[in-house]
Amino acid sequence: MARTINLPLDGKIAPYQLTGVPIELKKRDAKDFPRVVYAAAHVVADPLQDNDPWLTPAIDWERTLAFRHRLWDLGLGVAEAMDTAQRGMGLGWPEARELIRRALREARARKDALIACGAGTDHLTPGPDVTIDTIIRAYEEQIEAVEAEGGRIILMASRALAAAAKGPDDYIRVYDRILRQVKEPVIIHWLGEMFDPALAGYWGDDDHIKAMSTSLQVIEANAAKVDGIKISLLSKEKEVAMRRQLPKAVRMYTGDDFNYAELIAGDEEGHSDALLGIFDAIAPAASAAMDALGRHSNNEFFDLLDPTVPLSRHIFKAPTRFYKTGVVFLAYLNGLQDHFVMVGGQQSTRSLTHLAELFRLADKARVLADPDLAVSRMKQVLAVHGVQ
Image (cartoon, rainbow, N blue to C red):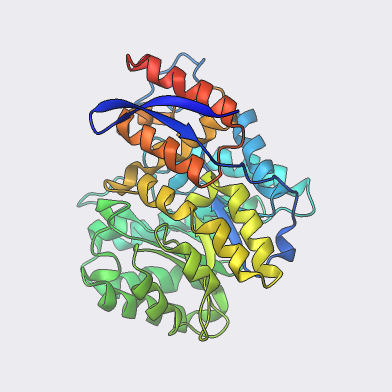
């Protein structure tokens, strides 16, 4: 039966007929995939708590952890307490630490759970009194907390370091000191300024190529302590250029939510693994695509992922930092949470027109798990905005 819904389009209301056939959900195991694949997972807010949403996070722990099990069931790893979980945009370090503790406990109860956890300096407020030594101690504090729970580290970029550093040497000093201490090899996370304006000039230079040289220097000096680096610069050319310069045993984890399909597939000189926020939203497609790639069915791999790229580009459009709203909205449409409420009230960062286009693109990408439910929930959102 054809499903039609009236949606905003170009300042008017126009009918849209759904055509997508949902991708089948199948249980898979991460060890069977030809790439290491992490989905940066979102948190589910609790709308029933009496809190001040802009000031105090309220988290539905049961639904938040259930979502992690869904990712593990699909064979995807969980990148925990990252920016997709609204780290630094509603989720502070106390909540992130509790999220990490709970997620690692859930992971230990399974044999197939791949997980790594974000450790950074977000409990520091950047300012003139924050020194490089202060930043080192802040990193050490969070790393100790994650390692005490048996977790592996994703070394997050530091707003405080971006504000305090006088140049590349300060970055080298911090990362060398931290990497010498970690128990297991880490994933370094280079988050570009399009995701977080406070990280402009990271690695001591506004020029990404010069910054890349500094980060490569750090990695080469500490290769045994670096599992890989995730770069989120939304430039496939820069990612490939860096990938080809990495030490042989160090992975490139694509953080490019615009070009992930071709970067994961790779070329004759190598490929990228993945640590992506969009894989939270398109987990069934990502899982099926990894399975296809493992069977050397490249055509099927691209047939599954290529239609998701326009959706991802829309979700991550500028201002890119508001992409979390689209990720959570899709979780709501798919019945993975019962409401469209976010930590920090971030559901308000995208317009109704943006959400309507997201709905159309999700249908075309075949990632609306239950089209009837998605239509019903989209109609509720439209009604709240006065569209009947």
